[in-house]
Image (tube, rainbow, N blue to C red; front, side, top):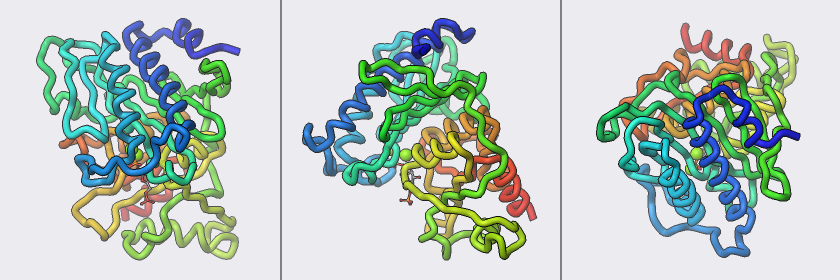
Length: 321
Ligand SMILES: O=P(O)(O)OC[C@H]1O[C@](O)(COP(=O)(O)O)[C@@H](O)[C@@H]1O
Ligand SMILES: [Mg+2]
Ligand SMILES: [Mg+2]
């Protein structure tokens, strides 16, 4: 079976970009180990501090952020990086090459109850010949040159795109990434949706209408029964969609009307939207493709509806009336 190294060697992308992917992949091997060590290593529970978005940081949020940051600092083509867990960007002092944005541990509220978590990353071009500023990161998702996630579940997997489809690698017992899922393709139709139903009363009309249609099942206009799943780790919910289709939604809601959504554009929305599109699905913030959103701040939020193309089209149509 091909390894990630074989895959990267044979891939037409620039050597510099492949070095960035290798650096992230190697950090994810280490993260997989510290996540699975959990209570044995005494690294569960709160870190006793908040991140820049006023969310409680878990010890593992901090540990995994440091691991990925260290790996990127040592990777020559990386000019700088930004993390969900860091207040601002970090420049490596090198110019040109690439910028990396990441969510080092997605779904970290699940960590203490031993439910799947993950790491999400996005690679963007760095400006040539200039000192790095925060605004250099504010590129729409269409400018990404690669993106991926690692899922730390029953198996650890790395799922990535270098703009030629989506490929999945499974971590072997000896610590190698083996190519187990070539050219992942998301079915256009599905009977499965994922949303936090406890927020139902806060949703806007188009999302209510769409979910009502799913809940009505065979007796409603959709004419088919739907199943529902919600892991509360975006990586795990998106991975399920990669493997068998479905639609995932974290829409705007009335709880915080000035906030476009809960999920973060640069660390969650953009990389997942790129992966979903590369696998034949769609990803929107309501009416617009997530990848076309022009970011205006590093930690900006975005509403997310993504997955099987025909379901996402339905939500888009409902949002446009
Ligand atoms: O608890 P809620 O509101 O259902 O939110 C769940 C969502 O929040 C997130 O956990 C946010 O990720 P972080 O753990 O990285 O903050 C997503 O992974 C998930 O889809
Ligand atoms: Mg997250
Ligand atoms: Mg996180």
